[in-house]
Each structure stands twice: as structure tokens, then as C-alpha cells.
Amino acid sequence: MVLFSIPFHEITESFGAAVSCLSTSHLTDEVIRRSKRMILDTLGVGLLGTSTPVFNTVLQCSQQALENSKVWGRPGLSLPPQYAAFVNGVAVHSMDFDDTWHPATHPSGAVLPAVLALAETLPVKPSGLELLLAFSVGIEVQGRLLRFSKEAHNIPKRFHPPAVVGVMGSAAATAKLLGLPAAQSIAALAIACSSAGAPMANAATQTKPLHMGNAARGGLEATQLALLGLEGNAQILDLESGFGAFYPDYVPHPLAEVTPTSRYRWVLEDQNIAQKRFPAHLGMHWVADAAIEARAKFLDKCPNADLSQIKKITLRVPTSRYVDCPLPVSEHQARHSFQFNCCTALLDGEVTVESFSKSQMIRSALKEMLLKVQLENPQDNHSSFEKMYCEIAVETTQGEMFTARCNTFYGHWRKPLSHVDLVRKFRANASTVLSAEVVEGIIYTVDHLDTNQDCSMLWSYMHFNKHMMDRNERRSSALA
Image (cartoon, rainbow, N blue to C red; front, side, top):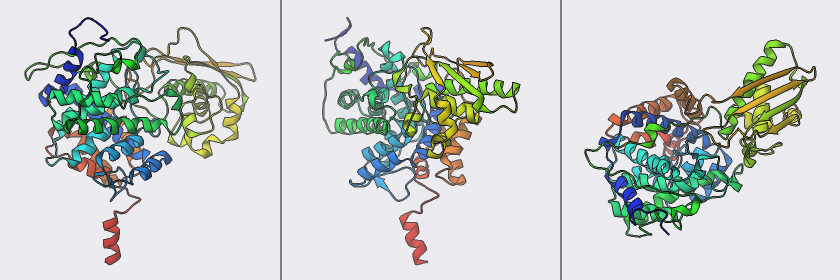
């Protein structure tokens, strides 16, 4: 069933044509600047994620195959490119520290691992600008598809968006990197669509990061199959039974025609990215900022006060069942808990990577404070990362009340991290795995991607780990 009265095939054909025809000449300064910020941030959270149990589990599973592309943070270890994309994609989302877009998705984690894994295997390595183009095309396809649904503008309830649009972005990006013509690009999108979809019920579990890894892998595999001649439905984006199956209000539109001399308007130019200050669901950042402000007011008036004097905490947040977790028992639940992030911010004045460690989660002061939190869901507080807010009211045993409200947290697309703070975040994340010299090398390489003719150092840098020696290096040291 075609959803509206435009010529049959036109939507899917327009996407295939755009993926095939967009070139580096279409990239604008703003798209390049924002893409480089996204790439740097994604590499950093991915390196940090290589220390997580879920990454190690999927890595162990993927090592059963032959080797080709490098695994981040694992010197001497390579996998077939689709499996490298999978485990590196899992690393990016393993702490929920990766970027978020509007309409809601995590755009970079499904695209960058697939692009880097594929680029490493190509006989002629892409230039930095060609890498940026492939990445930007993958982001663009996600942004366009999300705009075909009003439901997609809200905090998701049914499907996890990276598993829906992310796999399509991975397919588009890798098709672009391979230079596939329009027909094969359409085939890649059609094949990828059959790998799309993952339920929100697995949010706040170890399975959620697999959604990102599967999206990266599924898109790359779809492109590899399209290259070999496999075909899918050439109207996949036009049909209610195609990509429209994921959205009940799906109303697609064809992309503008792309010519070598035309100016292309990228979604990324009009819609910036949110980049997180700590590893948790995006909604937690409103809560943390409001709680930190309320804490400051409390301690400013009562410098010597004991936080145990707090009698009641009221949070006014949107309705969202999967981030309403009063008593989290795992780090993944804690990353998706309004209550946990509120209490952590009140107790510590910040939320950090360490906040989700077992030692921090089992603190008696935290457990006691969690019991004092009540949620309210005002009707004007919409379940949308574009419109939501958080209000907090802290009542003490002495009857005093301290309130705060956060409309836009620092790191949101309306209030993006400064370049200095984004680089500081990258250094903090990457330095858990890499030496200072390699960290600075990645920063320099990403900053100069648009002028670098050889970007192979990027995936070489990502392969290092200061805590592990390469097997060859170890062998050489033993023989010395």
C-alpha cells in the first residue's frame, strides 16, 4: 500500500539517487564541523565502552570468525568487518554515553563503527573527506526517515530508534563509501530494513547496547549483499508494509534531486546534536541539572546542613515508563532511572562515570534518599527531548522548600557543549584506554579529516590499549 499520492517508487528512488549522487562538494562547513564533533565524541565513548562486560561478551562471541578489521582497544585483535562493526557499535552504546538527536535516536554509533570497519578493508583507503561524506550520508538518511513520523518526535515507546533508522543509516553510509550506484544503494536499504527493529522492553538491560551493534553490522552486511547482487523490494521506503511498518503515522516524502552543481540542504545543518556529560539516558540530564541547582540553594542557605535532613523530593518529569525506576539494582537500570540520577546529583553535586559503579550504587545514603522521591507527570511536560523539562522540589524536615527547574541542560542541542568541553570529555574517556600521545593523535586526526588524504591512522590509533601489549610486541620483548 502506497501511503500518499506521489508516483510509485519515487520516495525509495529519491533516497537511492541521493545516496549515490551526494559528493564531497555537497558537504558544507557546518556539516563538516558538526560531523567531526560527533566522530570525536563517538570514538571517545566507544573507547570507554571497551571496558564494559557487555562489550567483552559480544567480543568473545564474535571472535569465533576469521579476522579482518580492528577491534577498538584490543591490540592485535581483528574480526571480519561486520563483526568489528558489531562489537565496536556495542562499545559506543554500552554506557548510554553516545550522542542523541531529534527526532530521538543515537545517530553516530550505528554509522561510524560500520564506516571505519569497511574503510580498513578497502584496497584504496578513503580520504578523510570521503570518510566524512559517508558518515554524513548515514546521518542524513536517519534524519530524513525520522521526519516521516510525528510519533518519532517523542520519547520512544515501542521500538528503539537506532535499531530502526540506525541500520538504514549504516547501509547508506557503507553504500556511499563503496560508491554503489543508485540501484544497489536501494537494494542495500531494502535488505537493511529486514534487519530493523528492536523492542524498548530491552532498554535498561545489557541487551540494549546490542541494538546499536546489530544496526552497525546489519547495515554493513546489507551493503555487502547488495554489492554481490542481492535484491530487495525497490519500494521499501514507499510502503506501509516496508519501512512504514515501524510507524503508524508514516508519511514519507521524496528527497530533493541531487546534481553535481546543486546545493544540498542537510538535516544536520538545521538540527544540532546533544552530547552527554555523563553516561545515562538523555532524560537524566534534565534531572541532574535541576537537582544540582536545588542542592546548591540548599547548601547556600544551610552550609553545614546534613542531606539526611531532606524529608521529601518531588520530581516533575514527563511520563516515560522505562526511565521510571525507583530502586535500580543494575548499572543499566540506574542509567535509566529518574530517581537514581536525581539522588546522586543531590548527594554528590554531580553525576559521573563512577556514579554507576557498584560501590556508589550500594551506598546507604543513596538507598535511603531513593525512598523519599516521588514522581509527578504534569500534562504540559511532554515526552519529547525537544519539549520536556524537569522541576524538583526538595522539602526538609524543618519544613523548608528548595526548588529548581531545568528547561535545557548543558549538552542539549539548544545548548551544545563547547569545543573545549567536548575535547575534555573525549580525553577523559579515551585516556582510560589510550596513552596521552595516542589520544592527542586522534584529536588531531579528526580535526583535520577534511584535509587529510589518508585517514588510516584513525583506526590504527583506535586499536591501541595502554594496558595491553600487542601480541607481536610481547613476542619481540620476550626474544630481546
